Amino acid sequence: MKLDELLKELDKVRYLMNPNRLLIVSLLYLFGPKKESEVVKALNMPWGIFSTHVAMLEREGYVKRKRIFTRKGYRTFISLTEEGKECYRRLVYLLREFLRQVGGHVER
Image (cartoon, rainbow, N blue to C red; front, side, top):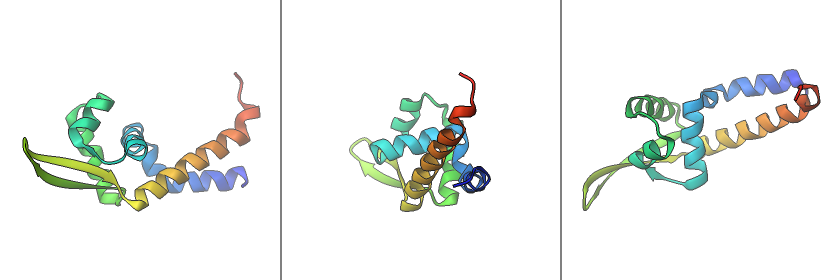
């Protein structure tokens, strides 16, 4: 894939390129569904920032939330949708391809 084509493809998944959203999606991709509180704690992210980005991801169809009644009361679980998983895999592939192509041109 040529660099200009690669950049156009990256633009299609730009929604996940926000650091906070990328961290949330990465954690869910690697470890599966989690309680929202577990994600907040694992990422050391303030609740306000977390809830804002999760709402955005949910609106885009990348994550889904499910409220479940447990012995300790209601807990909200969050998981990636198939669309979210595919978008994440696509982003990782495109970033690797981008680094491969520009790797020789970057000063170290």
